Image 1 (cartoon, rainbow, N blue to C red):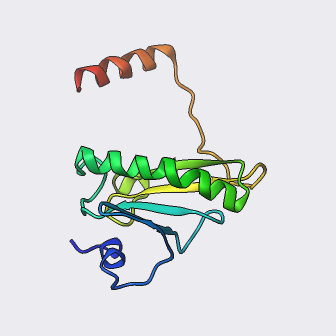
Image 2 (image 1 turned 90 degrees about the horizontal axis):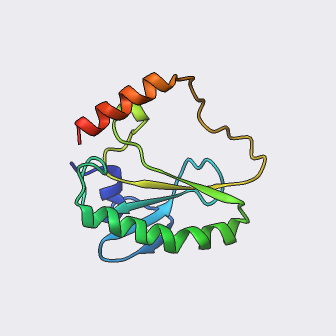
Length: 134
């Protein structure tokens, strides 16, 4: 595939790398939501987290637990969102597994997603359907 992230891993493209080990690289997003917005990426390229090896996802989450406190301290954030997009419908644009650490500030103006109204019957049906698909 040779995504833009693989090009960063291979040093074919520049990036502000904040962490790297044998399995994971993390760098600042060039189009950040807030200061300190960091992408955490496995070096093993797969299109999304559902395609990635379980070990790669675990390694990413270990790195997130290390980086997030440092990012929060550095930028003075009040919290963070941890997001991965899977598929075009979610807004995924780079098809190489990655997680966003997005620092959040009280009153930063960024809204959470909107919610929809749902009945208990609808919830019960969805619950049953999900369980049948596991």
